[in-house]
Length: 201
Image (cartoon, rainbow, N blue to C red; front, side):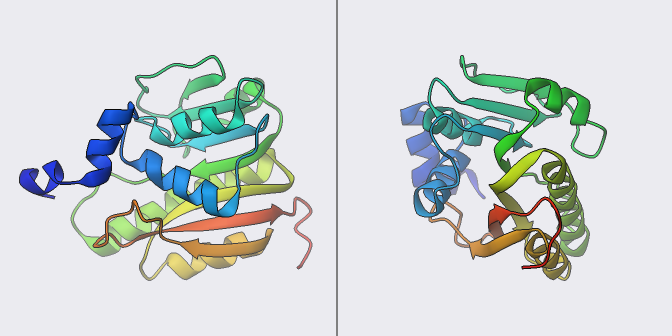
């Protein structure tokens, strides 16, 4: 996006005005408002949380008695009483640190993206790999009936990710929140009703 276009970006301006770390906060807010994936008092794991927009929204919605645990290779710039940050890579063994913060989560969300190379086939494949890794973490810590959200760059590997999450959730919806740029190829897989036992639907 060119600089003059960025200056006209409504959600970017709104994030600055309302104190959110990024425009992505509104994607999380819109997805939760529509699908009710976060609940007051719940525990949320945010994989790839930096710069922190999704975690900020999650902190607001779980309230003072909930917990949000964010994981990223880059620290976030905000703090909150109900937020814990873990410096780590979803592609490495982050489970010990995650389960030390909470043994179980009601919701796992992932807005993970790779460093973009400009080669779409490569970038799409890398992004799907990150989402698969996030799904693997969710499979170890998400409680029965829990919810998840995974970003997906639409491409030749997207169907693999969709099939994977459908094997463990009762309902999977492909969503594109209003805050996503219209030209963006990203979609979000909203997954409801987690089945830890891998039982068929």
